[in-house]
Image (cartoon, rainbow over all chains, first blue to last red; front, side, top):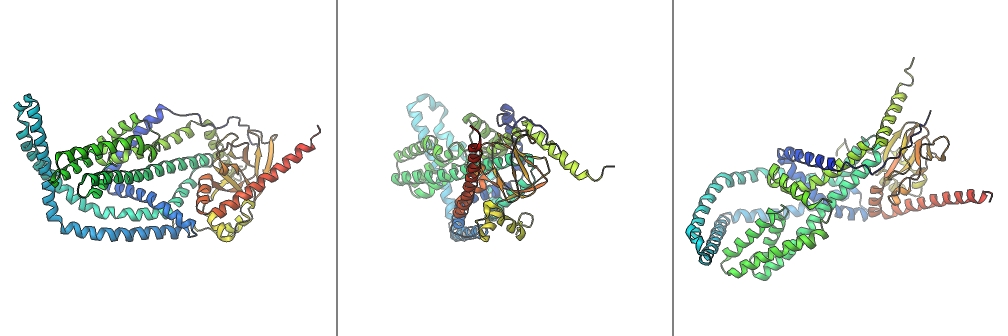
Length: 381
Length: 158
């Protein structure tokens, strides 16, 4: 048997460059279009991945303490489920008990918001006389009421019914997280087993890169949420805004939606501040200033420290992807487009490197020929 | 339980691991932990396992058959070593991302078990004692190879 005389050595230098980026954009868009039609599965799966990365350190800790991996995964998942039930039951009871007053409070917030904007417009009209011709101070509340009623009729009822329909689907998340914790590694190994020998080590490298990227992104996102909650919570408490910690947590979680999430969080806090009635305009301006400050800290200090360059993506590319995500799949698209594109980019890059590596492809073809010869060895005349 | 994914290790596989020099200092419980991390690969005689200069991601253990370590593309004239069953090669892969210093080819049809660097890093996090024992065995193997090479050099006429 001749061993052959291959000279070339596989290299990592062949990169597809612009082609890789085009393919990444194309595949990400296609995935978003597909995922948009399977939201019932995508959302719980996304939550399960977040839970997986939250709970994984605890599983590793128990494994380190001598517990088997399976037992550690079961213990951590079980404890999490019990804790979730203990929190959710009182919370659900509280929501049901306060639903009537909650609706009233919601309208109170909306009316307060309208009042605040009308006051601001009135002050602007006094400052700049030419604005008075449009009578913005009176026109705005009327238009806002019309739009608000139409919006509630067209969207809110449907959204509430939809939210109830989502509950069973969301209950999937802890189960999926448990199986990811227990069998995730076996599933990856099963996939690796199907890879031809020639691409085996490249596939190990690919799995390593995808896992590292996803882990640093999702864990970073959680740390960022905690930091934002702490900063906003302390700031809002100092300003004397009621429910400071709850509002801060809500605003920090809304921050998962790039760009618009922070704005919505800020608007909610402003509405609560205005509706409170005890705070003056100074507190409202201070709350907005607090949000701007935390936003700046996020962009220049916290994000580099937490999510950092986990996605290794140019800011311009990130913005383009956000536009595509929002246009193709709405709010969900905004949330998942960056991590999804990050994973797609790594996979496309690795596949491109394999396909463009003539040595690897030659090794693959040679191994196939050897297998074919071996299988036919006793069949020749 | 997911029968598709869950693969119970054959006890004979574990006995086989005990004969692997790299894992010979591990006890039965530790063998089970390591067995859960290994990937089995089968190679035809003459098939390239890795090339010289390639990025390394895993170490290999020969379970059956023989593996030839040689200079790139010179299997007949550039033989460096032949690896028998129970021995490991490409160990530096799990100690750091070194490039392969030689080519590895299947000298016979062979079955190999591989341990990836990622899994070894995980092992070092979760089971420090096992990782330490494997690292010590790698160090011993490298020390023996160094002694052999030193002996070869000292025998050269100067």
